[in-house]
Length: 509
Image (tube, rainbow, N blue to C red; front, side):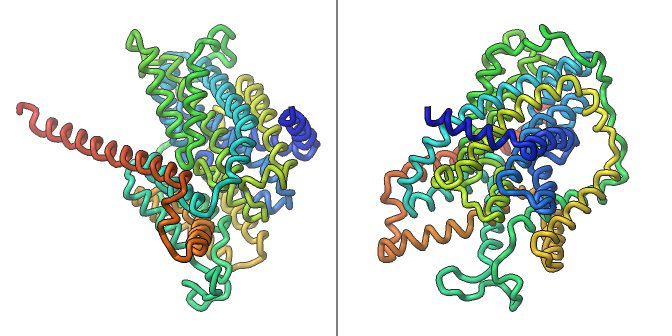
């Protein structure tokens, strides 16, 4: 009953005129950003973070707006997947497998409506899970010691490197780069300047928001400048704007299966929606592909990954709020926002900032309903956004980035740092190195170092304290399994690709 009472207080916060308007704005703009190919929720939230500072929003209002943008982006990612065969983000890749064939068969509106309902079911399931399980995990996390938190951070780096990256070596390298960047500034124990090169601007290290906007928003602009002469994208025709209700309700139990799998994947620190969408599709294909229809326009091939990736998105908020460890790339960006607003996520957040936590959870229920109502009748408007020229969008991205970053500290140095991170992000993306582990290292590096110092201080310098706690041992065991599986899959994929190449070169052998 206490949970329902707190949730009622959360609705009182979420339904204030300001927060409700921000939620509606976040849902609308998030769907548009998610629909634009290549931007995705991480870039979308990163691009609009400066807007929260420019508007001078309260922490709870800023978090509600960005969370609704997050959910809106997850809904919107399916639109370009179905209409263009171009995923709006990584999780939407699985939606292209059956969504685009269905659209080409003249059932585009039906595919979009089916995916909207699946997104609603998955996101609502995750929000209910967040309501029920986040307080329990927060209560259990109180018993974590410094060595346990250090093991948790190791697990976060291992999962985000091993699960979300096609090349585990590159993503682990990116995490190391993030940890190196996090070490810039004054040593927390001795006060000695580290890697500041004599600049007092760097004594406090790099502002995570400045780094994130540079890595994602500015690098996106640089990519646009490089590819601005590419041809226009071509969509399949939408057809009937609003499909019949019986055509939408075809997913059946695929909704629930995808939601459960996605939610579990989302809770894993660093795994995120990509794993949720992939696992949901694979499982559903094994169960429902009786007539070999998957990959040819089977509605359940849309339902499963959409329910999975939206459930994973909600699940990823649980470790961020209760442990201070982001469950996905987008929640890593949101974690940076909270830190910049002097709000420390973790097990005590639910007792110290109950209005913020429960106001956020209540706003997610509202956002899910708004997004469902918005996405079916307004799908024609959102699909037309796909033909919006990027030369209109990119100046807006640059304007918001520069004004927002300057408004944080009124420092031109931060603007220059943002540009430098933009160049770094552009180079890393050209090398096919994920930017999410860089952000994770930057955000968690300081806490990881502090917990390592505390653990060693408690044990008098004995490193065995890091592996003697039952909680830490359990986390290390999970980390080992995840890393072993990731490297094995990477090895087998390369071997299969090499064998296919050899067979193509020597077809008669």
